[in-house]
Length: 444
Image (cartoon, rainbow, N blue to C red; front, side, top):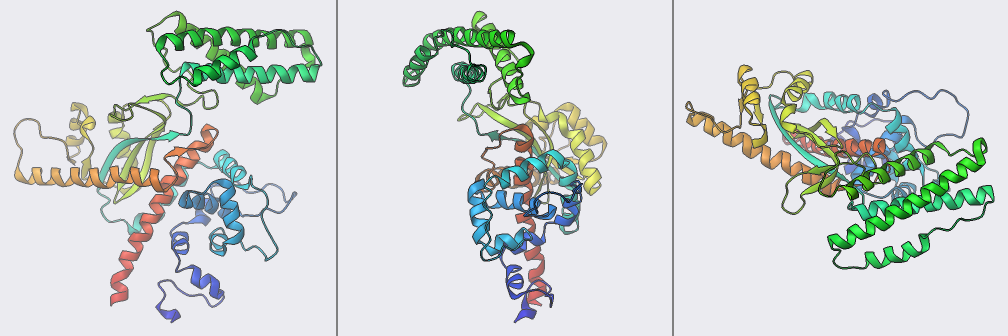
């Protein structure tokens, strides 16, 4: 019977829309205020051009769907063409003979939203919408994790070879467009040596250093030839913006690697690790199986099981210094905080003093006298809840919401990918909370 559905039935709705509300995608759609979120995007300035497949609400829904399903961009379009539930989720309905053939639709929407959406406002709008259904808002958990970028493990040899490939391809394109003769260079010879080096099972430090010397020599030669072409052609030859930035980055890599080769044992802070993701830095985590991670280090807050990104950076930072900012964000969203829990790195004297002045109970180990059974019990509960719910949520997001290795190609898209993955996981948790809240009503 229709009156037994969990959701109100509109007489104008089709039977398929009524069925959709009872599906997992339909329940997820109901906890997302897409109309409010779409208001954060700029309105279309002109009616010219081809009709868009998706409205602003649909574009945001498609990005949630991407994180929820974990499909590639091409697979998502393929499923969207044949799955009526996905179409209703995105607020669209394709005709029987209609198909979306643009496989770049998802990536173009991602780039557009990353360019125009304020992610902090987007996150806060969602949290405020879910706030009435959250109960234990006075308890705050904090921890940090790294959402890794999809990139090859950075070594000097790999980085220099990527630069050589780019410079050689650019040089060949310039010769073709300017109709010039090729100058002598050792690229083919070094390409064979690089293949041989890649096949080595054990790459000793001596062999790697020798390979770096050869690649630096080749890269210097190629960059010099490119500059010769520019000097010869003068103002008649200009590089496009992205190519110019990439070539400048190659020059920077060459300087850094030459410095490291000439000064063995010295470290160069903030050096480039990837030619295609230059914003990524090495983050030392100290884990036994993965001492270094490469991606965005995120300081995460959790309130009643809902995760909030308080701060993120692609360079390393100390999360214990984010306590004051975390409490400020919690106060703006939820009000007063009474209990706080974090791992041992947060238990500095400055943080203890700051929290005790505000009469906030913590999960830190007691210093000195004054420990009571009540404090021990509260401390054990806070630490157990934090370690199970917050740290467990990191694994859930990485394994089930496409955050284990983020495959975006630039920093803005990677950050957007990360926010939508975390918020999609939150939305699924809100579906569970809503069903639990409605269960007693159905029983009655």
